[in-house]
Image (cartoon, rainbow, N blue to C red; front, side, top):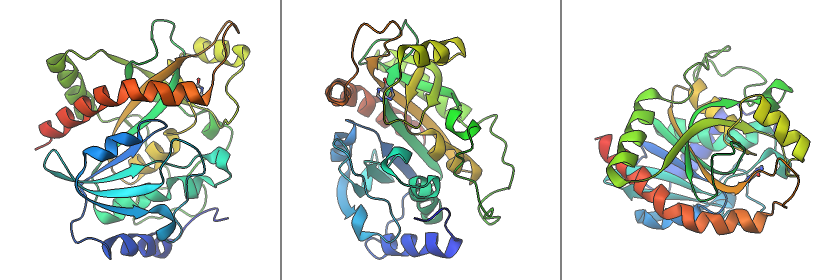
Length: 279
Ligand code: HPA
């Protein structure tokens, strides 16, 4: 298992993508659990299965198709990851974030990261969208950083600033789109836990006490790598379930996937609207 990748390895993967299309993406999209059907909106799609790309980690779980879709969305060249991998699947942090590195080498300047998350804020409901304003990197604090290992100075600094990981202008665009389309767009702080077990009620009360609005098992490593490499980030959670702070209800993956069906149409509206404002 690769604990970290060299620039040559990252470029090997990028070359394998280039071999399949001459149109290079400017915008990258990562689709979370149950949100993969958004990739069907891509025009003139070129689909590359993850297992066709050297070094690229392959999704092992239901709800993640496992392919890279290149094409146009809202008149822009995009690279859409239909499914991602997570640390809990057994991959290293470097593997989980390799796709972001490859996108950077292909010329992606903006990364739109989505996820399914549990609503920890008691005011938030399943089926709603939440704009990430910041994150709480609990797994990073515990030592699991995707930037561990030799720094790739060509891509970014050893000690990157993270005070503006979520781009202010993109957040503003998302707010405008939500207003224009009458979408309810919550805002808040996302915490990434390693999973795969969902949280205990005590875990959730702890998360709420430290200011978390939504909890999931992804996104934060990808955002750190994106920001390290100078890629602008927009982060959106689709709230799939209410986190169970009192221990009265169960959380299931099936519920997460089911909520995705309600969330995808709103997410498409939001993402198309933001992309229209990027021109
Ligand atoms: N907890 C952690 N990850 C999740 C959840 C949750 O409640 N829902 C979707 N992903």
